[in-house]
Structures are given as C-alpha cells and as structure tokens.
Length: 262
Image (tube, rainbow, N blue to C red; front, side, top):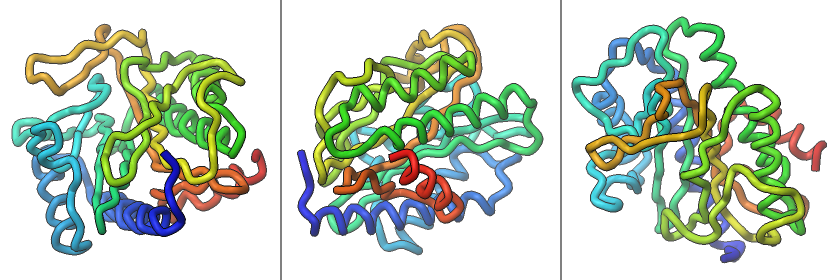
C-alpha cells in the first residue's frame, strides 16, 4: 500500500504532467465547445505534447480520455458531440495520465462564462472542501479525519456530500486500496503512513445527496436535478504531512496554508 521513494518520484512526474493538462485547459474558452471536442483536445495534448498515456481510455471498457460532468451530472459524464457547453454551465473535467507505468488522477470544475452566484458558491465550496480533506493528511492521522473535515465544511455551507463514490489509492493501477470516503468520524478508519498515495475527490450537491445512474451505465446525476461540483487531487503522505502530486502552479499558496495547519 505504501510506495517506495523511486515510485513516489515517478508518481510525482505523472502528477506534474497532469497538472500541465489543466494549465492548458485554463487557457481555452469552453463556451461553444462540445465535450467531445474537449476530450479530443486533451488526448492530443497528453499523447502528442507530453508523450504520455491517457489512462482512462480503455479502462473498464470506457472509450474516452476524460469524464465531462455538466451541471447536475455528479461524475462519469461521457463526452459527446451533441453536448455543447453554454454560458452559465459548470463542468467537471476528470482526467487521468500514465507515464512510465504510474498513474495520476485529478479533476477540476470549470465555470463556463458568466455563472450565477449560487453555482459559483457551490463550486468554491467543493474546492475548499477538498483542501480541508488534504489538510487532514499526515502520518498517524486516520482516514476518518479526512472524511470528517470534508463533510463538516460542506454541511456548514449547506451542501450534501455524495456517498456512493470515493477517493482511492493509486499507483501502477488507477484504483488501489485504500478507499477514501468523503464523510466520516475523526479518530476512525485506517491509520495513514508515510508513502501512501491516494486521491481526495469530494462531490458536493446543492440539493440532496441521492444520485442515480443513467441508461448509458456511466453518467451519474443528482436525483433531484440539483447542481453538483467536484475537485480532485492525487496526494502522498510524507514524513512532515502531505504532498499534492497534481498541484497546479496557482495553488502553491494552498500548500503553504496546508503546512501551517499541519
């Protein structure tokens, strides 16, 4: 379950490359693009520019490079030529990348053009909730501490946390042990040890937490049609706390705050 130093170095390289994919997307005006166009753009960048492999394509029979989850879609949204992003949408882009045999996983919810304040608040809270979970990571802490930190923040802000999907260990395989729940009780669950690598990826709903899977077998939506937002990072437990392997340049201040909390 723990990774050796040489494995951590390879995972960090995959994470750095994946962060650059989101840097590329940050420069792209999303309004007017189909989710399939974004999928193809990301594939060209990962394969052509980064000389890496999009790890999601072909995994479990999935035919695309990313998940594109728009508005009430919680996760696993399937790219489509017919689904065109419009001003006011929110869309989570969930992307994996494999380099030298090791996989990194990250996601970000984008605001498409001018978005209503209530949607912006949901997206910001999902982002902050992820960081609350990250800040709870350190040797000797427990997974319940991570889930509790996330759920407490979400509930304080009036949102629900989806329970059917969770974070996961990651390395040579996309999904490894342990499972990382985004709810829990402090002082419970697996004890974290230096060298563990896993994702933290809370999904917050504006309404109730109940979800359902659509007929395609992939797309998960809120049962009440409310908006959902998600963020995800791959993290490693270090001797002094936590390292965010998929950290993007604009987030360096978040790491400093994480160190202060730790």
